[in-house]
Amino acid sequence: MTEAAHYRFPPSSAYALNRCLYALKSDQKFAERFLADPKAAAAEHGLTEEERAELGRMDRDALVARGAHPYLVFMAGLRLRMLAEPGTLEYF
Image (cartoon, rainbow, N blue to C red; front, side, top):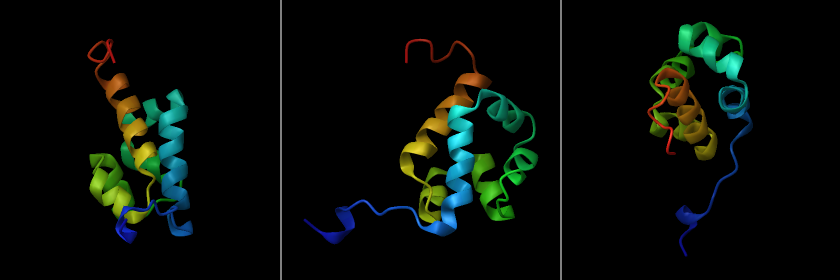
C-alpha cells in the first residue's frame, strides 16, 4: 500500500474550517444563515477570505486540500442542498 492511500488527520490550521463545516452539517439555523449570507456566516467562524470563497462555492477539492475533513464537506454540502432544494432529496 502506498503512503498516499492513508488518511491524514486534518491539520490544526484547518480547525476553524472544520468547525464551520460541522456547524453547517449539524446546526440547521446556522445552515439557514449560511444560505442567506454565506460570507457573513462563515466569518462567524473566523475563516479567511479564501476559505469563505471556497466554502461559498462548496469547492470540495479546494476545501479538502486546505485540510477540511471529506466527510464534513460532503455532509455540509448535503445539508445545504436539502435546505436550498426541499423535496429534491426526499428519497436519499
